[in-house]
Amino acid sequence: MAYMIDKDACLGCGSCEGECPVGAISCGEDGKYEINPDACLECGACAGVCPVEAPKAN
Image 1 (spheres, rainbow, N blue to C red):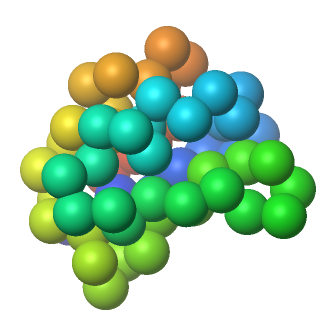
Image 2: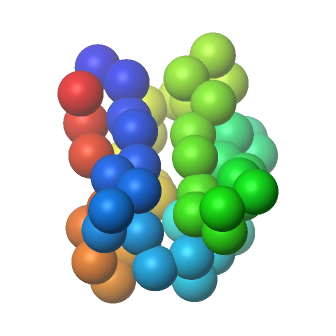
């Protein structure tokens, strides 16, 4: 089950990027964050720290 970030909900705060243990999250050109599905461990750490619950399990 891969994680993705709901770009409509993302505030661009970066809390998820700092929490990811493998650096699978980066900021896109639009200022919103995205998850590289090939690097994601599916641990859910990003979802645990997001204030608006933008990271979602697919």
